[in-house]
Figure (cartoon, rainbow, N blue to C red):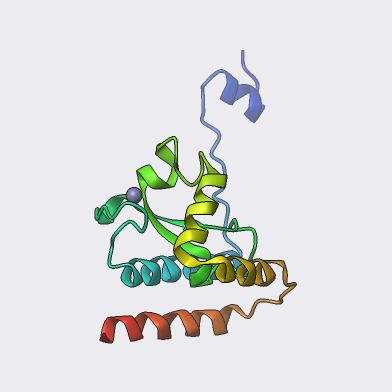
Length: 148
Ligand SMILES: [Zn+2]
């Protein structure tokens, strides 16, 4: 006889334990929204084409963050982002994630040493993000690209 202990019931598969869905905080929701907007912006900016190899397959294009996403100071900064196909992003041996050092050198050769230095300064800034303002800026940039 199995008791009415939920864990025991789950173990014996009499019932499935249903985990409550984690609710996103307003801040997390805002961050997700900004990620989507900047993804749209970067795809428009680079005309749905991989910056490294020129492949154009919209579904397989990824937004690569030169400085990782934990750096909110540059997370939605176009200068920190690259539009890459899945091969150039993660799959190839020479991809951004597999060979970060090679990728950095390539990025410097394309965008310049000044780009690298200035981005590094921005990345290391301690900022208090104004998410609403960031949303406004991204939408404005998207609309400007759409109008071109
Ligand atoms: Zn590529």
